[in-house]
Length: 369
Image 1 (cartoon, helix red, strand yellow):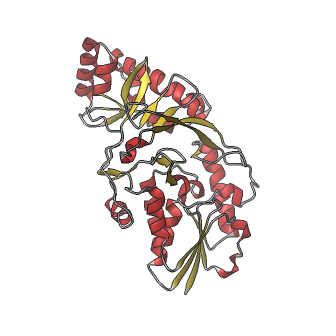
Image 2 (cartoon, rainbow, N blue to C red):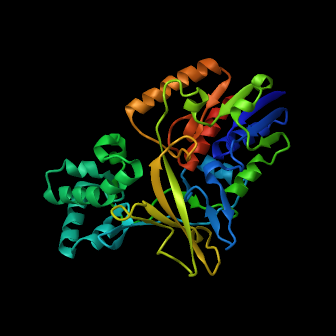
Image 3 (cartoon, rainbow, N blue to C red):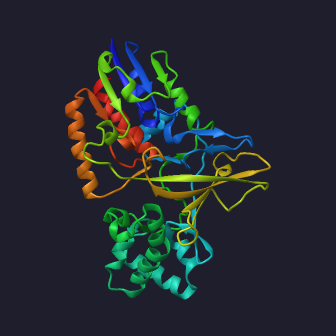
């Protein structure tokens, strides 16, 4: 018999625990400092019968069939396909920028010229980072890149990261694309959708095994580790090591919920505001599961620095210096806890989409199964 401790009851920890539970000789304890399972995926139905994503919108999307098949053991998914618009110059334009956006943003003669030049240089259906356009000799393509940079990326980045783009790792800029297509979906993955009964219900089923014990409101440092053969840790690694090398920087977000007596507040589930207001975007939750209610609930999303004890860690701040600090922490932690593996958004100090978090968990736990 092997005894495992899983630190964190989010999607990473729940995946590890469930796979380990397939061997009925294993005993698995899952702890979480929160008073609920599911981590940042946590959702709940409010008094209006609307499924609220407490920590911001979560849209599942993947092209990894193994991940998709694994999760469908615990939930059905609807066929929701996410679309995002940004308010630019007073108009709602689809993101990422594509041929439809170009036609909506620019006069017809300019839009047709830009579209023709894009198709002469690049293959239809590809995503081209705007920095590639900035390096072109053609003035129309440079104009397009500059327009997107100033109207979609610049001020949104300043709000989201609290820094100007030249202070942010270049990989962030590189991810701002033009999609040479008329596909307005935000994701093009093979499998997309929202769990029919929510993420919390899905993760509850993942943890509902006879040899899994869940303890909430439980700190890692309260646990006697002597009885465990191995530990999977999805928490913050700098906190684990008492911040001895300094704090790993994160950005946090907070959400202001508002309820309205109307069918819908906005045109879709997500509307970005790159250039107006202090919030970055507005979520409207009814769209995800097509909830029926006379009211609607929105969440305005505000970005801020992470401060221990004040808010939650959301996004690791990209950059070579931060990666180097994480690697130093990892070396220290592995020396102190040789029977521990690190994973998840906090344990790996890496932003994961949900499918990538599941994939990482599946890969990490394979050596034990």
